[in-house]
Length: 290
Ligand SMILES: *Cc1c(COP(=O)(O)O)cnc(C)c1O
Image (cartoon, rainbow, N blue to C red):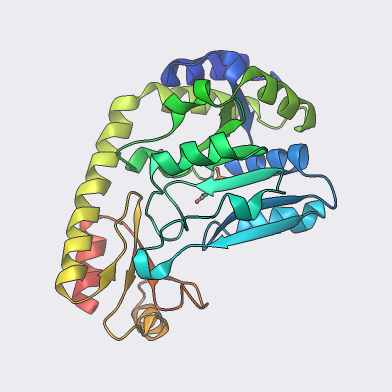
């Protein structure tokens, strides 16, 4: 394959109003995250992220032999970002902020992303795996902050998780550096072709996203009406806590009926389940069982 994937890079750059030099292709966005950690954090250095957030970040740090500072989001205020978080990560070389966040589904305010990019001396990677389901994203901030990287994937909004195509958007200097660290042929010929076709059909994408947003609104309203605490979702899942908080019991009883939701044991997450926004029929069945 073309090791830099020039044709696809150009297509992605055009989609975001950027230049091909601003784009790096990856074998899924997990590959992009891995490349970023290897680029920015040496052994004995550290990266930082929020908690709860995507579980891969601390795993990548352990593999790299660096440490990972996790800033706890405030459950009581809807998993919001603590006021003083930037001061607490001043030694880190890379901050990974998932926006919208997984598994909570909410988005930290854009002004907090700006405060982080402006006030943090390392690189800031905004993981936008779910941004297509959101009302906004951070791509327009890239020219303003040379330390900012955005990671995207075709796995969620394009329903192409098996394809393995993710990409980074950043300044040409950062993309050049990441290019040196990636595997030479990390994205195959067929993946590049199929991603070209998928990205060229934005109308299909818009249709999918709009169906998911409608079903998400119905799911959230219905759960609220049943007394659940519902984290406002900008994503394709809803993080919700049943009345009484026995999320594990709910997870197990749904599982016994063949309906799978995600349960994450732990202090802040253990009272919630993460429910994927499926088809209207899926969600109807789920709500009936609840
Ligand atoms: C799914 C996901 C990814 C990884 O997606 P790929 O399939 O590797 O492209 C990265 N970050 C978050 C937050 C995700 O949910």
